[in-house]
Length: 194
Image (tube, rainbow, N blue to C red; front, side, top):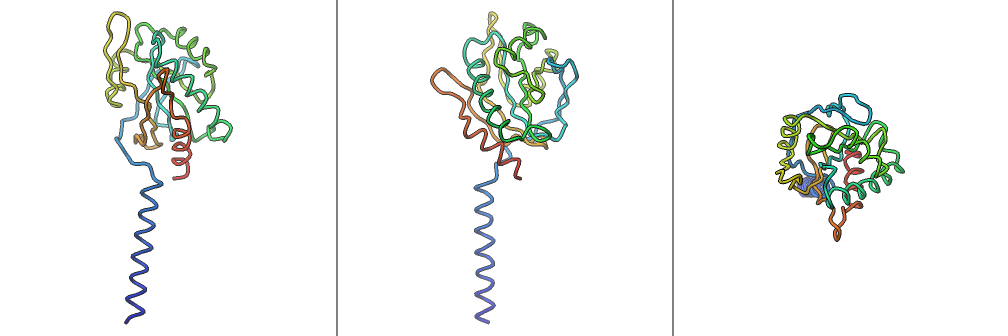
């Protein structure tokens, strides 16, 4: 009887330790979003988010004076780190969505992406109609208000898993505080392992 009780105790202990380890190594599900479609301006094709890939999602507008370009610069470095790990082919992609489709023409977005060296097969630069943009921004809880040519917007990056679940959020960059690339890259790799 004592051997049975001891065995059960160790079984419960092992299960508890495994659960604790899992909670510490698994990223939480913060919110689930609906699949969306927009035009990918780099190749002119329609982009569909329902493609089984992990996504690093950023919102921007090309006239942004500081936060957006700092963020895109940092994302390019994170992209290059992940590229070295060989994760892009069928697993991961970056998605950048303009918050100002009225001013951000396709040509303007292409030039913006090119200025960061971010014209790659696995970095999609999206532009939708005003209605499509508002719907996608709302899903991500991305607030935006246009005032005299400038857009005041939330400053959050998103990590989305293959099932459209937001699994991580990260502050966008400022002149003083840059994107935590180490955390972002680490979290992408953790999602791949799930």
